[in-house]
Image (cartoon, rainbow, N blue to C red; front, side, top):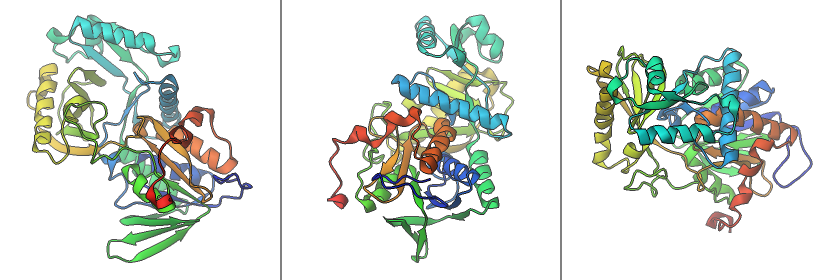
Length: 394
């Protein structure tokens, strides 16, 4: 059953339109398909070609606040574990090793381990010997101590999105790439193709999971959706609020890296091409995407990685992806009905990779039964009620 945002009597939901074919949109489309809802998936480009194409894809509930948001991320991790147990091939649960290169860093990691509220998360501090046992290819002279988070890992986003979309198509869904949403009206979505032609799609429910494109799409129904403008938001300090992410990958290399590894100044993980993917948000987020200095970041980070792992001495960067982070205005997650009557639901989060599987389950359950999961009760639009409505809604 489908409960509309204005509290009308629930109605049967047999068809759905999902706008956005990234990690969240593909997950929602797949969950709807599993529940016998016929899905039309629409994207302005190809599958996993937006923010999902330029993500570090770390799955974790680590060092996040407030506690309910951290718990939501832990539920996301567990949802990926369930999918993997059922045969999904995209969650690489390597565990994450934090490497402290000073006593101060080691103390900070130990505090973080103590602050994680759930013993079942499995986090534990590591001695220098413990770090080197897990990651023997590290430069031992740099290691003071660390921490281990055995349930964390990374997602092969391309495999995940394409596998989920393929499953949907096999079950009767349709995919409409390279179509930009121009308008939502009642149960209809109007799109524009690259040649300028218009198409109209109709469904019982519309789910918008279009990342940074969500605010523009929802203005057509008079909604000022609370995402930060990524083009107005990059800063000069590399703060957590910066919207730019720089994700770099080497060619195939025998680096000996066994886990997802993080240390001050760089984070590394195995890559789907047999190389190493590396990033560091404080470094990569210092400048806007069109600032030439952004292109200094890959080499800077690769040098840091080589200092940490001498086995990377001959590694060369083969691919650089610039991502634009999806940032709700309070830094958390938004999942809710929008508007005052049209059956439109929206979802946006910075933690899309971690949360995708869990949010898909909770969103579809809410769409089909009217039951809103306790884990997302505090992540609706009510908390933004003080926001001024957009001109489109005036």
